[in-house]
Amino acid sequence: MKFGKADFQKTQISIAAAVLMCAAGAAAVVVAMERTKTAKIAQTAISKDRNEFESKLNQVRNEENEIKQKSQQFNNLEVRGVIGEEQRLDWVELVKDIRDKRRLTDLQYEISPQRPLDANQGSGLNFYASAMKLQVKLLHEEDLTRLLDDLRSQAKALILVKSCNVSRLPRVAGERSASPAHLQADCLIDWITLREAVPK
Image (tube, rainbow, N blue to C red; front, side, top):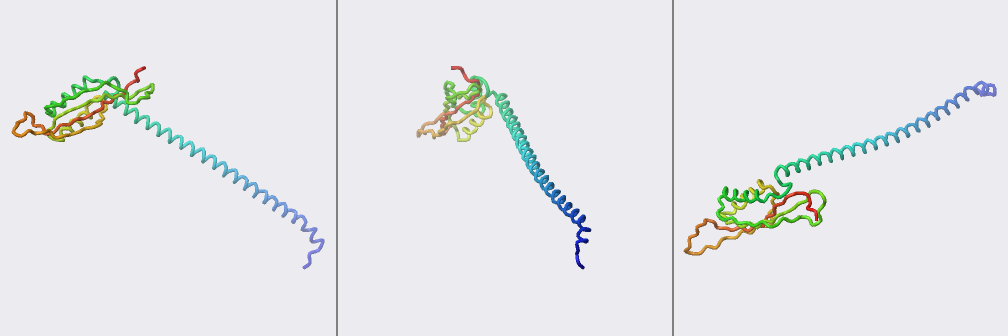
């Protein structure tokens, strides 16, 4: 079968329609691809914004939890009497009570003047320390650990034991001692409080 000029004229409209349909299909594909690309860019931007928002939200939650924890710590210190002016009379009474409760026959101490812990104090609350030299005669080492535990749990200050030297008391042959103590502890303890900086 031969394809003549007359046949070409008959199919001209169909060919033109097919070309137009191919062009329209190609245009639709291009438009679809552009829209897909635009949608992906928009989705990436939305995903980035959402991640940033979630990150900021998590940061706010973490800061809120941190503030709550610090607020609770501050309240605990305030209730305990650590914040404010140091309460030396209470400290003295506490040491006497522990001495009597633990039956420590020979306990001597000396408290030095208060000093700032940080030389470069800020304008808000600052830490201050009063050093105590403590000398106590012991029946055994456990007496010392109990004494220090009592101070840490009951003092209206934070107790920082800087040093404790325990030595055996000398026994003189044939001499009967009135005290049953075998050891002596010499300790240096910081009583730490928190209060407003003193203006210079």
